[in-house]
Image 1 (cartoon, rainbow, N blue to C red):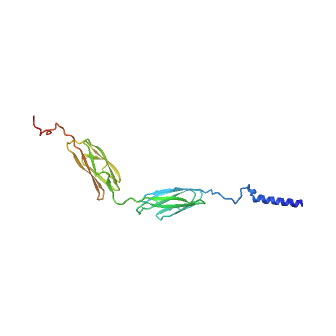
Image 2 (cartoon, rainbow, N blue to C red; image 1 turned 135 degrees about the vertical axis):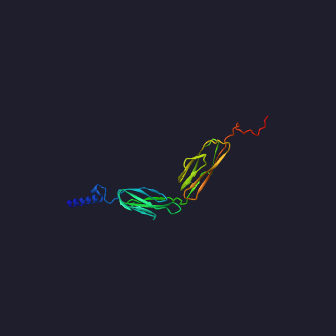
Length: 229
């Protein structure tokens, strides 16, 4: 009888040990598992309105896939494993505003990573030519003044012979310095700075003037109307 009780106690002890996971140090095999996957992507990308191609980086130790929510965006490749460089591209933005797309990157057991892609509005195709001033005036000593040109086309510029320019032509936006020497004449001088668009019917006239030099009292004729004493 004592031997029977001994076997019963041994059996109960073994059952308790197994139930508590004692066979593998108490860690158990059915507990929650922590994922060791990692996935990192470039979060934001901006593309030019005329169309552009850029690269984004994926850092991962697992396989991944990419989906997009916009047809105007091209992504290559859309799946892979581990670290990779992804090429994204878009043609010209034909809308009247910036446009946006979202890439969803799914990898392993991790939540999706999002990449926001912004494509700027395309620049206007209409020719643009303007300046920040419409007239310039110099004192008798002369000096330097600037004209800021805003443009999306090629242009040329001319001025009166008593002025000089830092550039005679250009393309796009520019700052032009107009230099004038001292006025040697006892009268105001004036003229026009003319900016012309190349191959388009656009031009701008900027009036330019300079104050007269002071008259010399000893100059012949200065006192012609004065009666003798």
